[in-house]
Image (cartoon, rainbow, N blue to C red; front, top):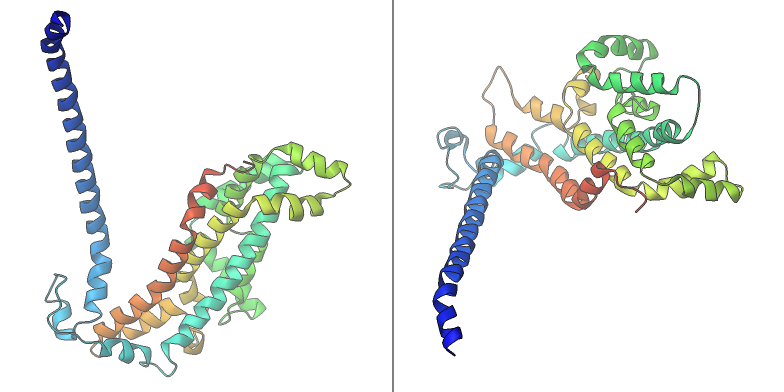
Length: 298
């Protein structure tokens, strides 16, 4: 008993130091969470302000930088929806057509090109792969003029074809590189086993490789959707008929340089146009990390 009683005073400082360390770790974790929440609110503030402004009268939108609503104006949504000769849903459908074609084109063409770079052997393979990577660094302003001349001679201007057809030609090198890295993570033994069973490259690609590429394909589809849906510059160049306007062009048409702009309707339709982007991102976010990490074959 005397030994245990003598050991208690020696253990008390150790226990206190451990408790102090645990308290410091908890304080640090709390501060980190508070900082993350504050940064998240700062990043979300413009979106929240836009949502709140879509429910305000025009006279209060730019006078109040806060998020409090003093006058609720739901009519902004109905006014914005029917502001043009067509309902705003018409332009949403146009965007859906363009986005659907772009997604299908990128999934098919980029996956085929990635399989060729990752599994096939052909002359100057590394040179072509390097050229493909270099195209990532080319700004769109460099190639937009020759592309416009080409599409104008083909009679594709003021149609959806310039926005969809190039996707079926594997023009997005970023997604090709992403899929190449993913396919390289798939063990070649799987290909060899399928080849022993008599499968050719087409069967190996569609029945073996493609089912394992679901995370990379989902990542490609999500990014293609977001980038194409929000694309303004390219659609502005090729689409001149208001009936073929997509969502970004329809939002631009709200801003009239000669008369007063109905900013409430602008923000209301901006909120409507953001809803599909949020839904697609939330539905596919679990695939993003797996696709970008390119850890296939597990």
